[in-house]
Amino acid sequence: MPLPARSSRQLTAVDAPDNEYPWRDWAAVRAQVKKMWQPENSPHHSIIGLTRSGKSYLAINGILEIAKYDRVLIVDTKGDDHSTNVGRVVKSLPKHTWYSAMGRRQDGPYEKWYRIIAPKNRVQANAIIGEALDNAYDEGEWVIFFDETWEVTDSIGNDGLGLSSMCARLWRKGGYRGISVVAATQTPVAVPRLFYDQASFAWIGRIRDEERQKRLLEIGGLSKRDLPVLSTLRRQQWLLAADNGEYFARTIVK
Image (cartoon, rainbow, N blue to C red; front, side, top):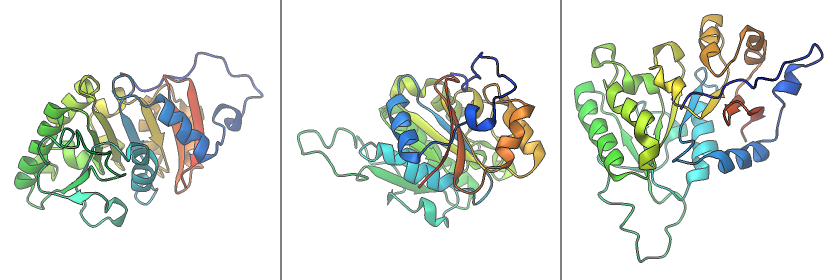
């Protein structure tokens, strides 16, 4: 599923960024995302922003909070980021966690959230994270969060985990398995094209240098005229493009 494309309506000379990309209260944006986010139809989120732009905060306290009663796998390639210090730390996914709750009262919020910290040894990390992603795909019904996408997809020789093909399967076929991928990066030039092409929700945050801003022009009809909008964003401020280009908004995640 391609990223949202710009609506075909023609802008007039009096249109301003605040008209095209209105500032909306986070509660309203959250409610709209909750309504649109469907694993089988609109499964994936992509988050782009500088270090300390608030990517992890947006993912954990914004997007994933909507899935607090679901099964969530957090792939932690940093290990020392307090903002992703959530979920039960495990070395592998529990087997059949979705079905173990059958016949019992509903689990509380966040009880089925699991975090796997990638070992510093990249070969070991490839095996551990790869097995977890493979199991999650086989079971289905998972929300998976990559705290830094290029570290998961890039080759081991480039200090990544070399799991681009497995991630491609999640992006391309995850919706059929009830899987949603929430993928964040501060290096948009280094992530696979599927990061852009398969996302239903594009969250664009603070990007300082112009070359990285231009990379974002690939996202759903964004053009050079939109660069000033991106350059004005500050920490925890986000431009959201969703619903096949029919929904654009700027918001501050609180």
